[in-house]
Structure formats: structure tokens, C-alpha cells
Length: 350
Image 1 (tube, helix red, strand yellow):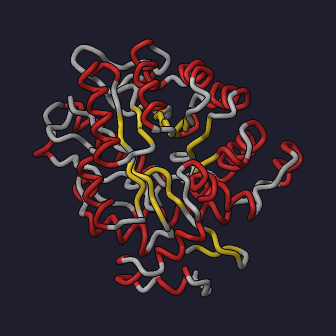
Image 2 (cartoon, rainbow, N blue to C red; image 1 turned 90 degrees about the horizontal axis):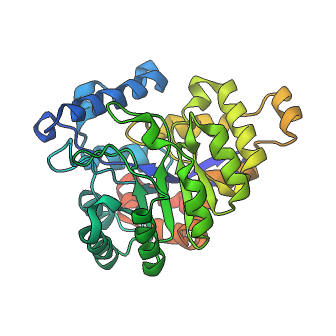
């Protein structure tokens, strides 16, 4: 467990993937464009000595993922966010079934989320029920710019989407993670527009809408929606690595987020394997606002705020008792394999 200023910081990495973009899995040129674009984001923010080659980036082992997250990466838990992209990849890019294998093998370390696409109609509703029945999911990841046949995206505030959100509420799937961030080739920029969150959040106050990547680069729209809709949260994946690569910009974004959205509605995410949590966690935890930013926003990005952002807020959404979870993790397979048990018993660990 990460320690900062002498205090424990329980890290729940709220945005991770285990993907397969191997050439054997690609069935459309969009699949190659997609992974190449991911790799461009990776190299743009990752320190040179930590960058992966495109070949190792296409597909990585479960063993490497576990080591990167929990042995080296300061994560205590992580939330799987599936992205299917079935038009591009024969077996999907990152599916709930693949993720479920890891979640079962390392019980207590992963939160398994599902997904839906309202263009799938009645079959999709049945699939959502199956995901709940078989995996007891309490969250879904939505990719509104995903291609399907002739369609190149869908809206969260559509009539079909509302039918699925009603089903989520009925099933107890309360955490709705929507990718509303940077465009990835060849997907359409407008299909990631954040404004469809507004009506959805108003119409379903019993659901939590986590806007992944805080709407960036449509940040202002997101901030004002989240100000008026208290069930809207910001996921910091993509923003978090800026703490190292562009620290002043990171401070500006965090200042705006803390001012408009509030410290209780922000969730850390490394976006693994776009970036490894080891250096991302360290960069965020060491980040500070400039004197000018403190004066402008009238607040601090202090230890208490960081503890909320790095794990406590996600724990609240996913009904995780951190103190009870630490007891469980002290004796789990990962702690045994990597000799991590002492840190969950209160011993000092870096």
C-alpha cells in the first residue's frame, strides 16, 4: 500500500484493461488504427525509459498485468472496464469474460464491470441480465463511439439507451462508466460528446454516472454538468499521467475539478495498459497546485483530498469497506506471492 507523508493511501485503480490487439485478432483496419493510436498516447506521456514497444503493447500476459498493478504499481485493487469493439476484433478487444478469469483467479483484487450497447435490442438486455446473474456486476463501461454495422455511435440520452439504464436500475447495476474523452482513431469525435450525460443523469438519479477522462477535451461541458448533477463523477484516466508530463496543466485541471465537481466525486484511474500505475500513482501523489492556482481556486490538493481521489471515492461507489478489505488482502494470493502482507497489517511500506 502506498504511503505519503507518513499515511497509508489505499489505491483503487478505477480504470484498467486486459486487451488483445494481436494481429491475429484484428478483422478490420480500424483495429490496427485503434491500437496504433493507443500506443501514440502511451509514448506521448510515458517516460522514455518506461515505454513499451508496439509489439509488446498489442497483447500482454495476465502475469505481467498482475505484476504491473499490484507488485510494482501501488494498486491495492483495480476496476476492469471492458471495451468490446467487435467490429474491429474477432474475439473483442477487452471483454468481460476474459476479465472474469483474472477476477476469479485473484478474488478481492479486481472489480468486474460489464457493458451494454443499446443497438443490440432485446438480445442486449438479455446479455446484461446474464452478466448480472453470472458475475454479479454493479457497474458497466459504455463506449458510445463504438461502431456497429453502419452505425458509428449512439447517445446515452436516447430512448433505447434509457431502456437499458432502466434495466440497470432494476438489476442493481448502479455505476455507469461512460468513455467521454479523447477520440481514438478511427472513431468519431462527436460520438464521445459529453452532453448526453446531462439528461441521463437527471432522469436516473439512482444511478452514478462516471464520466471517464472528465470529458477531456470537452472539459467545460463536463464540469458544468457535474456541478448541477450530484450523481455525476469524473474519472481521471488520461488526466492522471499529465501530473508527470504536464504538471502545470494537471494542476489547472485538478483545480477546476475540485472547484466545480468536488473532491468526493473524482476517481483515480491509470488506464492500464495505456500507462503503468507505478509512475502515474507517484506523480499524482507528489503533485501540488502552484501558488497562483491555490489563490485562484481557493483550495489545496492535500493528503486528505488525495486519499479520497485515489481510492476512498471508488470504495464508496462499489461498497468496499477499506479496513475490512485490507484484512482480506493481507492473506490473499498476491500478498503471498509478492510478500505484501505486512503492509495491510499496518507496517510501514513505500
